[in-house]
Image (cartoon, rainbow, N blue to C red):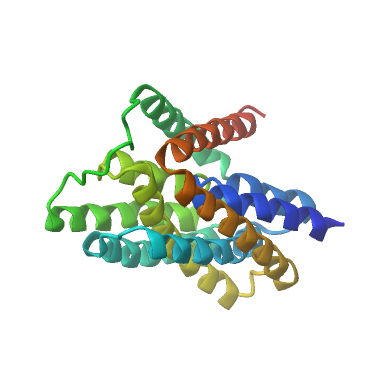
Length: 254
C-alpha cells in the first residue's frame, strides 16, 4: 500500500517541480510518513533519486523548446553540482541534524518571495536579461554555490528559489527562468544522489517506481508550462509558494 501512495505523491511532485519547483513539499514528507523509522540520509537519498527522473525529462523538454543562455547556465550548473555534493556530505556528517533549525529562516525568505512576486505584477512577463555575459556568468556561479549547498543539505523550495532568482535577479521571463532552473536543479539533485547511493542511503525498491511516476508528472507539467506560458507559470508559482509557506509554518509551530 505504501508504494502506491509514494508513487502518487511522486507524480504530483514531478508535475509541480517541472514548472515552479516545490516537489520536495510533496515527495519528501511522503517518504517520511509512509516509511517510518527511515534515517534522514536515507530519506534524502531515496527522495532525490526519485526526483532526478523528473528533473531529467523536464530538462530535456525545455531544452527542445526554450533558448538557453549557456554562458551563465553551465558555470551555475557545475558549481551547483559541487556545492550540493558538499551539502550532502554535511547531512551525513550531521546525521542528527534538526531541520527545524533552518525552517524559520526559509519560511521568512519564502514569505518575502511571495509578497515580492504578488505585488510586482510585471515580474517575469518580459524576457530582458539584465547583465552582460561575464557578469551573468559570475552571478550564475554564486547562485549555484548558495542554492547547490542548500539543496544538498536541506532542500525544501530549492527549485522555487532558483526560479525566483532567474526571474528577479537575471530578469528572465517565467518560461525561460523555469527552463534554466531545471538544469541547475538537475545538478543539485544528481550530486547528492551519487553521494547517497555510494554510501547505501537509497531504497531502490521505492525510489525507482517513484522515479518513473515523477518522470510522468514532469512530462505532463513541462509540456503544460511550455504551452500555457508565463501567466500560467506565475500563478502556479504563487500557489506553490503559499503551500510551501503553509507547510513550513505548520512544521515550525508544532
